[in-house]
Amino acid sequence: MDIKVKKMNLSKSKFLAGMQCPKRLYLLCYQPELAEKPDEQLQALFAQGQEVGRLVQKAYPAGVLLSENYLDHREAVSRTRELMADRKVPALFEGAFSFEDIYIRVDILKRLPGNRWRLIEVKSSARVDEKHIPDVAIQKYVVEQCGYKVADAWLMHLNRQYLYDGKNYNLKKLFTLHNLNKEIRIFKKELPVYLAEQWKVLSLKKAPDVEYGTRCNTPFACEFYAFCHKEVPDDWVGDLPGIGKRTDLLAFPPAQLGRGKTLEEAHYLVIFQRRECVGIHCLNYFLRDMRCYPLSTFRYYVPSVETRDWTTMSAKSAS
Image 1 (cartoon, helix red, strand yellow):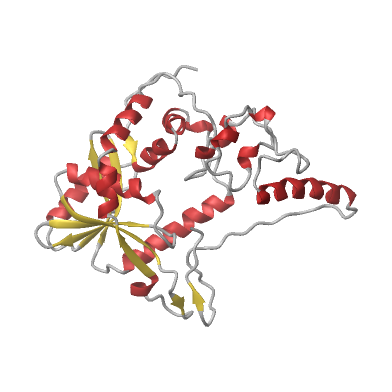
Image 2 (cartoon, rainbow, N blue to C red):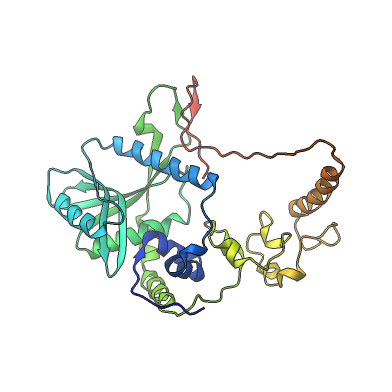
């Protein structure tokens, strides 16, 4: 279906979507109604990220939080400009910037001597991941293009070694900082190419044809997965854990490459993937013979910051 192309902007989340898959970027901009609604697990992850963000702001008590809504970007940009010009403001939360239709909000901007700034991106994970590099790089790029000097860029994440005493969080120990200057310097060389490719995608009249594969779940779960996999069988091999970069398998038409019911039929899989194939087959027999109904299932997630009042506990993360 052809889409009436309109002037579009790039946000940080759209840029990251485009880095993962051009079709995801296109659908996110022009056909967002095709996306699946966030499930309870994803909503919980959003909530824990917001909680971590609130905790981080307490580490900079004199900092100023922008009150403008994300939808009021123009007003937010104007307010950001005012606050950055005020030397009495030592830190700024959720600062808004725009350059050539790229809109971003920065978690923390800390004022440094010499009219310079330290950019800090906050994550509820417990380590630095490769997917964090373009996240921070696009922010630094836009802020600098707006005329501000960014001395360095850091990722702030939870400290795995921190032990919570059940009373008050020690914010200096709860979080740890990782300098990303070197990684961003390397990524920055290709950034103009990535941006040009994404603007080209957004100029198309219909979504680009993209083969499904590992990009559908890596590095982020795609909200258009169900839409793009309408014709993929439930036992598609691409859904197996650890399929990784086995493009030799993913290149097969899905109808020809199921998981298989026996080890012989699943000869192309590694051992733990074979176990899942056989395990599912055996589980089917087990459930078929059960006489107690209804059956129910449950799932859980590990929050980034535990809040239960235990005597000693550690900061955990679903990184």
